[in-house]
Length: 92
Length: 504
Image 1 (tube, chains in turn green, purple):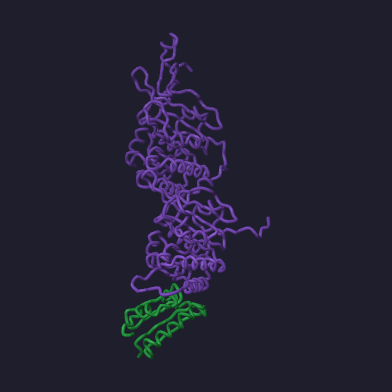
Image 2 (tube, each protein chain N blue to C red):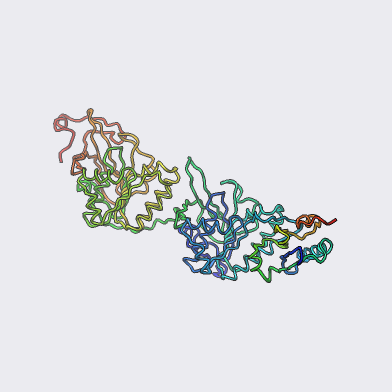
């Protein structure tokens, strides 16, 4: 069981979405190697899932565990802020 | 003109609006509705979809940025619209883009509204929507701090909606009633068509109006039109200036309920005319309406009276004193009294409820006692619009109308009420006190009678118990009655002996 369960909502292969995905993977591999699970949803293909989660903007990252649930909108370009947002504190 | 290039209109089914917009909203286009807080934007946006579902069988998508879908369901239920039922029938779909304060959300880096656009497109396709409402754009700016991104993204959504083949309505906030069209200047990038809803505080009274500011490439009525928000109906626009002067006219005469008065008018009022009765307090205006009603009932006509000054019981009691049995008339089913205190609502509310009563009862005769009481609750502008609306409405229905107006002074004088209505009425009857030798007497004259000759004399009348108005002979050698300063004009000796009345 991984500690971090996350879902990233993207729009197709837009540069902004690609950037967010790239940033997130790079960050997670450094901060929580092997301890995260990432589900990627393309809202163009599965708009119903975007509706269910009431996603407004893309990219949107939802971190479900560890609780509380957090949402981060944007291309995740500022790593320190993203880590704070995800509640990762034991990373230097 | 090439027909194919003309912009088609979509009748939205909203009472009055389709008239002032010359046929509805531009079809397949986006219209912006801008208004201050509390100007009924959300109601209008929801009603646009409701009318589509109910009247045209067209499904709708409601995108909400501000209130949660649950709040909208509850609020619209109070107007009589069961949105959950439309939803379960697959006719209405919410795209809930309202904020979720319970989930911590932050923005890190660039973003777009791709997800929202995907949801809107998905919803439109899912129910095959023909109408879409977005409420309200200003709220989006409060979700995100980066206004330029929001503008750009809203523009992208507005552009995408144009290609969905739907007619769209977007709402936006205004900060003042007469100022910028909308906050954040959203009108610049979202819509070719702009409608403004106003909720102006005028003389301590609220007055709602709707103005179509622009319809690019197509026509509409200009100016502000009053509207009301009514439970069960929603927004009702009162299309005053689009009312046309084309009512039919007939030469058929009807009785005023008083034979002598009929004679003065040249054998009665015209069937589709409006009579104004003007007089000071106590001159017998209500009595004239009672006799007008009774005269109709005798000829098997349906009669309806709106009483704004007296209670039902008072009116029935007083009518008995004039020999008119209102209770019996009501039992016969040809007569109805509607009593209301003028202060219960705005004039627009009264207009709509009166219209509903008229539609339900279908009278041949209608009396309003008095217009002056209604004037109390309105502004001058509202009152004038009310009169135009009411007179043209009842004329279209070929109803004979009698309105009363109270003059402020006991003798002579005119009221503001008359100023507004005199050109709208076909006949004017004046009831005036005449002070003669320390005695108050009453005089009646027919001032105007469109399309007919009439008696030009000022006649004395008395109010007789059990009979009502009894009209006597003309005043003679008395001048200045109408200006409130009766003077005795050089009578000769014989006249003085025979009294003040000439022989007939």
